[in-house]
Length: 332
Ligand code: TRP
Figure (cartoon, rainbow, N blue to C red):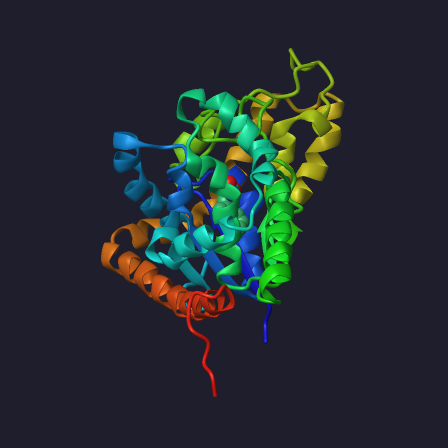
């Protein structure tokens, strides 16, 4: 039996090449060796979005995201692809796990403290419970492996603590989920300073047109030490170089010494990169266009994913309710 992988991602709409290199490609790879469950976590999105913003954005973001996932090669025949809220068992499990999760564990979570600073006007109960819901996501499917980025490691540690406590109180029920760190380098945005992110508008969408892609790359910041073409460059600190490495490692090795010796200018280097990215993404973009014309198929994929997920979830919940004394035990 293949081990089970679970991963969740918030519905952030159209994915960018940072998401692609950092997470999606890895999701696709894992399909070979694991039984994969990939979830678009719309409930988690509600910890930061509310009111008309939520209503306007969630459905659209889910749709754009699943299009990118499918176009990138996530295969609904092999993997379970679904939207979190379509498996309501997860909220029941969150409630049950919350009963044995100390408040102090949740209050020391770094992302919670960060969010308190970022949205002081909306420090809601759900935000504090975010890691419990995340734990419920994973253990509802008894997943053992969770591909995540570095930023999610504290959440996973907490998930293991919650599992250990639950297992200690009610008997061995859930495996302790292990993080599987993605080794992709952090992709910087076109500002050359911060991690690529839609929020910072320093990103390049997977679904961008070739022209848009080139235009965004041409405006990107490069090695700050290179003000004129004659200045020697430092590829190791240049985000354009890192993108070359991600898309065409051989080309990157060829260009690096030319950059160091000021034999190639940034404009030329960026043009090459835009060409590489557009070429590499052409098949994905073509598939995406085609999928976008089939909304019914997309609904079926998510409907079928939710059903398969629920079938697993129901079995887990029966076991959990029984272990916690919520149903009468069978007596012989
Ligand atoms: N917290 C994760 C993030 O912000 C998303 C997430 C929710 C998740 N549930 C999960 C990731 C379960 C892995 C497993 O990226």
